[in-house]
Image (tube, rainbow, N blue to C red; front, side):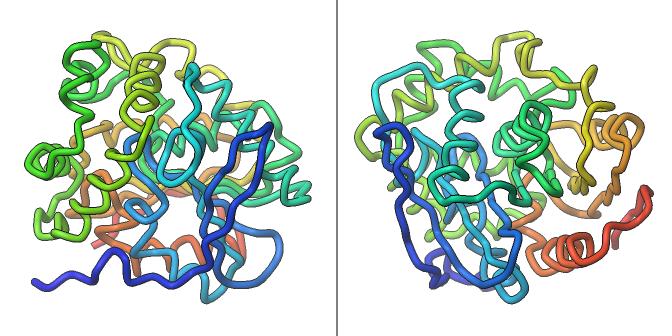
Length: 294
């Protein structure tokens, strides 16, 4: 099956400055409040959101942000932990003069969005979490091993064969692993400072026991004040789909959709369907329920 080229999106590339660090983001569409997209840990705005950004932009002003150390944002030599990611996220809103925004985060980007909502509830209007980290310590063994210094040195290298192999964990349908997608992952991982930033983030987030306890927000989920949409693929091999039920049980206003025949990257693999779910949620927040999608 032929897949759309990852680079086929045409938003405007912009930069914001937060405490001397230049943050890259893609802006497209119109409307208020804006929808801020946060990509996965070893990803970028294009890798995580290239398929869905044009669809969401039909209805919303979308700001797809590369956090420090990611994509085309600056990669200063420093420690990359959750505190820094949340501070940079809030700093991004401040730089754009935004008191509040809706947030959509995938995987590690979902972790950052979740903790931003918990720490700065006034800044997050509505929250969309796509297979987010942070709902439990469980994570696949490949990522646990990548937190080790020597393994991380190898696993973060921008080698096409290695990137292609690692992406096999992300998709139920391997035909989504296109040459364009592999090339973009290799490009951003090959940028100066990218591998060091990624290794720092992996070491701060993970150990052989899984996600570090300080990042697991399960005990604080009842504190979430914003309406929340959780999307998860039923064939996710990176983070267990059982975490979606944790969200359903503990987040006060939560709608959960389990997407059939979908892996860890629903915003890529099921972009039109995910865009429709997000569109409906942001237009009118629905009652909490679990739906299995065909």
